[in-house]
Length: 422
Image: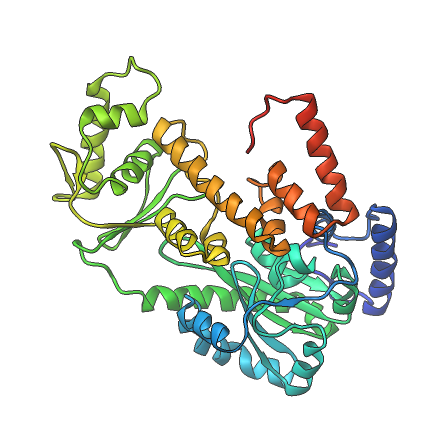
């Protein structure tokens, strides 16, 4: 393959390619090895699927129906660009007997539209609104793998991990919030072998970029007095939206804003210093210099002193996760959790908050026992060594790959009992 992200090069024989892929798929499901003709992106996805406990004969679970689905779609950030998706892809999908699908960042299908006969066939594998098609639930598939990798991907026929999906070909591209860069979901085109052409991958990627441009136009430009928007989960350097600007903060400024956002009444210099620095030899002058630089960055009237406090409200992704968790909306909390809070930070107060947030989510996941949500956590970089979650996952989805991974983790813990839980 000249391009590893394209499923089928122009001129290739699709029938022969399907035959080779089916043989490779059977070899993998029986022996766990992947032969050379399989693209690396597909081979890696097959391995992730197996580690997540996905079986080749599995089926999709419908999580949202009727009123719940309608309410969730109405509030989803991609709802405003559905007219654009239909305008750019609707005719192509109907005329080509394909389907237009849009999923959220967790691989849950929100909209599935297109040719009626094709939709009826897709119903047989639960490729329907409200169904969970995350890679950790349905194995290799374009919308699920696109959000897992956060990049456009094309999946052809027997490259799909689950056998009942192998008659289909699909291409999907992720869509991001243009202001914060946060992954919102993916747009997908699903149908027959004809979609294996390189043009279909470029097409969905162009549609995704058009959607992001449309979202940027639809988003109101905040005034200088509007609330600050802080994105700090899964990032060493937070993103701040302030006064119509998107700023990438240094690690220290990221830590300062997290702490100040959680203490609206303010913090004294001594309190901030204890919260930020493990080294007691750091002088107050160092902290004051950092605060002066942050004040210049934020602009006049935003950062006050005596005590240090923010003069405008702050909305953060940390607060969103905490609110959803407190309300018992576990799926929504996991959806908003993009990773550990400022994972590279060693500031004592940030470390405590990072652990408390992760521990709260972990406890909710283990208590809830949802296999798909547990698998999503276990497959993420922050959960791949999380023994507690793997034990809970093995209890509800005791497949051979999951039991094997659990055994590895338990052996590692026995060999190194001091090892910290990630």
